[in-house]
Length: 94
Image (cartoon, rainbow, N blue to C red; front, side):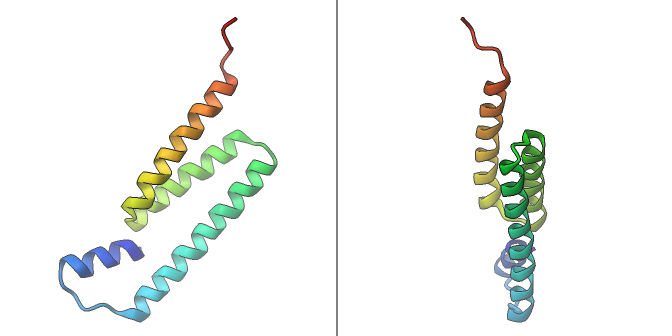
């Protein structure tokens, strides 16, 4: 929720609570590190469905915390990977 908190404090001219902001940043960092570890593990085991699920969960997390920029970049990469996975599964024309 760190990016959303930053957005609200900026738009509504609220005073920034640095301790709260740091806690939110720490929670976000821990969650994203877990996504990274899970994704590396799934890619090492070459499980496409788990990799796709992890990427989808990461996109949902970016939506939850209000990080629009990371969400946009992640969705671009996510769709690019989905196309690659679909291409590998599709029968190739002769």
